[in-house]
Structures are given as structure tokens and as C-alpha cells.
Length: 437
Image (spheres, rainbow, N blue to C red):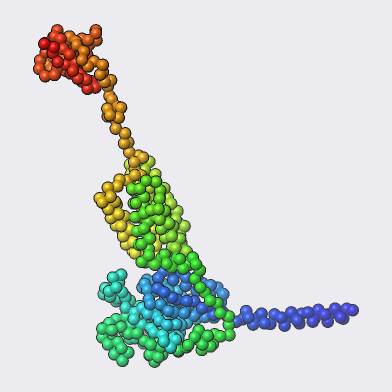
């Protein structure tokens, strides 16, 4: 009996070991993180990639594959993403799954390896300003240095990276004569060492890089991150702030609280929500804007203007702190203020509106006779009565009427004392008399 128990225990231990072997092999296989880099390169994308890289590092991933298909985007966001890629200990692979232009090419050059689909392209990386023109010399010089450094860091010939970003570099054999930016096809990129290979699919990429034996983790943007990417786009930010400021102005000139005020509040909430999800805004920014709004509202009930000035300053500071870039946020705030001023001028000049919100704090009752307000008793009962002058009227003086002394003025000339006069007009304290001849 004792012997059978030992055999049973040994059998259970052996079976447990056999069951754990497959699990051990699964855990031993490092995962590959498949991360999309699509649409415009901006700060929202950086926040998403930051989360993806952190998860990959914490899970001990064997590689991060960036699935790139982007027309480019903003240089400062691309710089942050490049720094993120340079600092990660995880192997990074750029899978150009169609196009990697402008900032997308810059990001690809910071990967450890680059693979492209047969119809993929990489290049056209000149810096473009907000008007769609080539950037100034200062910005272009800095960008060229970054493109060259990116190529040299990954042991690639920097002349091709420079030709992608500068019109003065001539490579006619690749359709990039002087005056044209370089854009390489998959075959050309492989030929000049800007690609490690051409693959037709993500699965083929895994096989070619010996990563097909592990698990695949597809990292996708959450709905909140998608909203954050849209809201934190440098084009959307000034639009949101302009809607908020214009809605507030319209609400100040409208009775009650309506659509304009609701739109203003929604715009502000969306701004802070997007920047909070993207990781740019902290709770201190939200607290600051709430305090600012409270101080601005308090200004309507407090004298001096100090509360309103401090509140407005707190709101501006909260927006600057919440933004991804202080300089760009400053431009966005100025644009929103300009829209608000223009809206205010149009409302007052063309529609003749007045600020209804202030009506409650302005005394509008008139203290005139028509409204029933008089400073003295209006003695209309005296009209037509005769009296005797007790003093000469020059033209003012006094009369006696039924034993009452009354101050009066003559209609025109001098009237001697003890003359009979008739009261012809009563205007508050002013009583006018005429001599009876």
C-alpha cells in the first residue's frame, strides 16, 4: 500500500512536469510587438508609441515592429519618437508598409532595421512650414543635421538622407536632380543600404528576421487615444480654442445660456481631455483652469478688476501647461483671442447687441418724473391760485398764500411787494407767478 502511494506520487510529479514543459516553452518565447505608425506624425502618436514601447519593455519583448504608412508630420513630434526609439533596449524594426515620407522617413532611419513592401517608398523629407512652403534656413539646417545623424547612427550613407531633405543635393540616377527631393523605391533603398530587405507581408518579415517563433502582440490605439490624437493635432488645437472663445463671446451677448455657451464648454472639455489622455496635461492644469474660471465669474460680483485679471492669467497659464509645445500653444491662444475680438466687434457693430450678462449688474431704472420719481413734492394744486407777494420778486422772492410762505419766481420782470399775483406754472420746487393787473 505504501509502495503504491509512492508510485502514484511519482507519476503525478512526472505528469505535472510534462504539462509544464509546453507552458515553459511559451513563456520562454519572447513576444513581438506589432505597432502601427499611421496618418500624421504628431504628439498624439508619440504618446501612443510611448505606451507601446513601455509595455514591450516591461514584458521583455524580443522586438518592436513599427508598421509605417505615413505622409509625414511635425518635426518636434518626430524628434521625440526618434529619442524614444534610440533609448529603448528592445530591437526595433521599421516595416514600411507603403510610404515613409518626411517625418516617417526620419523615424524609419532610427530603427535598427528597415524592411519595405515591393511598392513602398521612403524619402521626400523636407521641412514644410504652416503655409506649405519650404521652412527657413535655421529650421532647415537643424533638420538636415538630424537627418544626417539618423543615417550615420544606423550606419547608412548620409548623402541619401540629406538628398531626401535638401533640394540642393543632386542624385539624378534616382530621379532627384538638383531642385528635386529624393524618394527611394524598395529596390533602390535596398541597393543603397537604406533597407535590409523587401518583403510582401508582415508574416514574411517575421520569417526573414527570425521572429516567427514567438507570440505577436498587436498594439492598437484605444478609442480615447484616437480622440486624443485628433484633438492634439496642431491644426485642431487653435480651432478648438477659437470655438471656445467665440462661444463665450456670443454667450455674453445672448440672453440666458444656450448653444454657444454649450459649444464653448464642450470645446474646453475636449481640449483638456485630449491632452490629458495624450499625457501632456496634468491635473494641475485642470485645477488651474477651474480656479481661473471661478475667479473670472467672481469678477462680475467683485469691484476692482483684480479677480478677473488673475483668473484670465490662470486660464492662459493652464492652457500653456497643457499644450505639447509652449510656443505653439501661445500662437493658438493668440489666434483664439483674435477670433473672440473679431466676433465681439461684429456682434456690436453689425448686430447692435449689448452684453446682456452685465445688465443684471447695471442700474437701469430712471429716476425721472415719467417713471414716478421726484426729488420734491410737485404741488400742482397751487396752479391758478392768487396770492400776495411778501417780498419783491427780482425775479425770485416769496408770496403768502393762505398763511403759508412759498418761494416763487416771477414770469419775467420785477414785481414789487404787496402785489397780487397768480400761480401759472409748477415744476417740482419751481413755482412761477404772474402779476395780476
